[in-house]
Length: 338
Image (tube, rainbow, N blue to C red; front, side):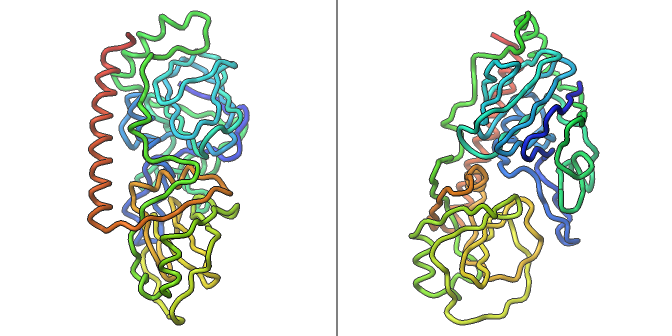
């Protein structure tokens, strides 16, 4: 199955779960900003968790499907439609050959994920298909999609093929056919317009003034337009140190909250650098990174302190939920279309 890019949108790239195991060589992990949405989209079309999907940012592309395709769109609601017919999200959808998928006005969130049965078959570079635009690695020539690009999908898994066969009889002249069930919002991360995300104290937390420590966990911060996949730059109360300190650059992780000399924090995200030298006041709990990923510039966020044990327990529960969800989806796929 192939798809042709008629319009690329604002920023559409191919992403999976990231390029792990190479940070010691200075290679960022990258991968999906909202891994929850990517993993669920992949499950809905019978793919492995780490299959490559499109990450679509705010203004989506126009894509023509050259063959029938089983797809799922999860994450932000960017008004997807196939030949003008609204495409239901968080469920598998069979798209008719020759139809055009387009995205309209963003209703909620920033990043949507388009998974196709079989995954997008782009080259594997250092163990991942993810696009790293700064390094020019992965995806389609290491860049965002352009008009005229053609992407090929892999071979759908058996459960996806069964569902495609069941849905194909419902297409007729319609551009799409879907199932009556969907993933319940009760399973979603705590997506919100103005969220509170959980965070641990960072290694240099005690180096900040008492006022800065209190402000970080009590005051709102605004996401600035300078934010990107590398990190969210926040604006809020200036977070001052007790006294100037010199730090040796150390490894950083997704969610690390660095504070440069201007006192305005930066939350490091998917395309973060591998080391950093700014003091780290906190680290966002992994379970809440998808929530940050869906925040647009201008939105405000608050931080709530949790312990390491609490953060680990939250992540363990999320992983357990995803395992149960994946098993339930695959049972549905095996049943075909009711």
